[in-house]
Image (cartoon, rainbow, N blue to C red; front, side, top):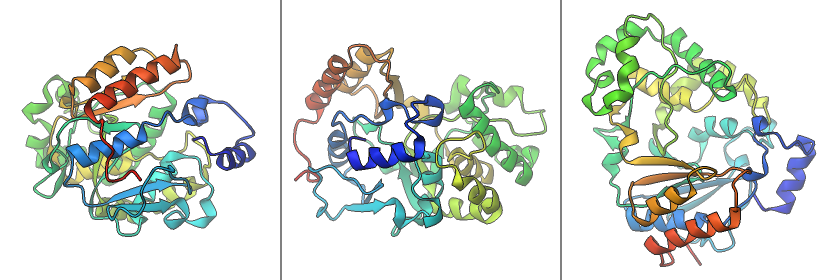
Length: 319
């Protein structure tokens, strides 16, 4: 984020630490101007979207036309309790999303590195009034800091759901043929009595607002206690808690979300990312930034050229 005032405040609380584990790498600051392509992608490829809640800690691009009736500018203070502000911990911000004023019960959460690059319908995210998702186990290494947080989620899941009952009740959803080989652990772990970590695809994630309310009703103590984590901590609970809760409740429709979505780490796959955008190879792509990207400016220019190829015209969100 290139806002000097924000960075000054950030430095005040972070002590100028440049530590990836705390999520304060320079790669999380910089902005190459791709956000306009997110808005262009929504307008061109998902015109059915009714409202965009644009969340920040008070910043917005100069080019963004906030008079567009589809845009709702949301400041952290509008939905996060004051005692936890300022926060630089994305999982704290995300756990309070259900408090955003005017948020629909059916909503899709986008991180700022996800883009729509091809035509997509509402049924990609919701069918029969339920979020589309993949229910598949994926045991993860305990040494990973991120997955330590995921395992915090699973402890709550196991305290409120019986795995055998859930999988028997929603057998067809857990063993949907569309998952393919990505569900192999479902078969291997079926006899095991407890939930283990689920696949956590980095994706544009559909949610029910009521799911957040339900989870807060049963785990509010834990979520409140860890909301003091101004930066990432191993005690965190992540948004996958709400996603896993939806799945265990059976409040989802089976869909292999990997089938039309691709994450490109720009450190190792910059050329493939640009080609995927230019050729519109997927519906959704994630462009994962990294401070160690070689020839950064050249890589970003190539990505920008690919976006301009498919989204050359200004959107109604640009002034």
